[in-house]
Image (cartoon, rainbow, N blue to C red; front, side, top):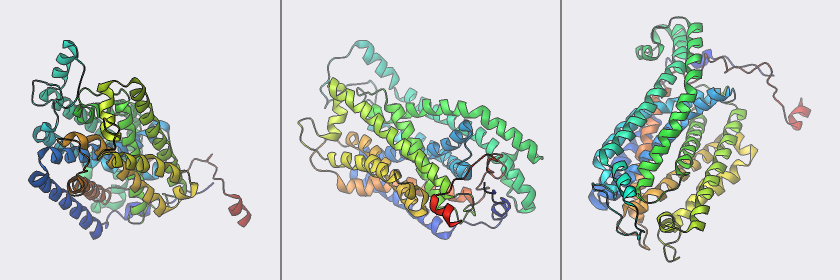
Length: 458
């Protein structure tokens, strides 16, 4: 049994904490690269590839930030003590979501033209040979994919989820801010009152906050699954409006949680000394986080195979076309996208699955940070593979290398920079640890088993 470290040094460090200049510098540079890539796209690549790159970055960033927040939901719902040292880091990604909601609104106005069903009336895709569909199918497609309804359900759904996240976050963050305010006095930021509200008693605030989190975790969990399934079906699947797979929504929203776990782990590894939480983020924490990432990796591969298998044996044109373009071409000849499909298989399954099997890697700071980075980049490649073939006029044997490196990677780096800037500046100004959470201290029944070598050493 081990004693829980003192939280007061973590609170005291808030008063004088500044974001390291290199972090703001790198974040700002990445944002500028993103803007430069966007400008290159509009000037050179064309509108469709440019807005396609924005779509990839948006879906990836939304998944990372909401997926990270879902770790807090998972810990609350499962009464998980192991992850409490990184719970606040996961919650800090919430503050990027309102900015991404605004970016999505801009995309739904200016970038909607990348969808071949826009503008109305809905029409079949010219380059795909389709069997005739019933009049009812055409009518339902025209209604479901009308621009106003399409944009409204995306913005309202994500807006509702962000609102629920905020209410939950007040229950988690408010008691910690009140506890820190009592210790810091005048050094506490005034804007903390938004989360503290009218609470003046820490014990009462903790009880109320715990009740709020316990009452809301199930609501947010269901809402997340519904909204991000809708994001997957609308923003990605409707690029090919006659292609469908029922598991696509679940595949996407679980991979979002996977990237959120990776982003949380990477932030904890890079910032634990700066945030003074190194005594809490022990190897056992990253070991457990890595095991959860391994489970998500296996789920990603399982659901991918579960979708590909029935599409392969059914061999219906409206199902197979999407896959053929990305894997091998209609004639069986390898096309420009085949190498990207192979890279996704390596980056999203073979490499992380093999590496995360190691117990040692999950316990070592920098190797664990590297595998988290690999997962984040791998899912970016996967989202690119889903979107890119649909935003270029034709599929040829020549991959658009310059556009990918300058436009797609550049815009993605812009979203990475935005996340870095927001998360770093938020963590610099709030308690980076759930200091008042009753589940942060070790439970009296917890048993910490040492290896045989450590046992013999003592």
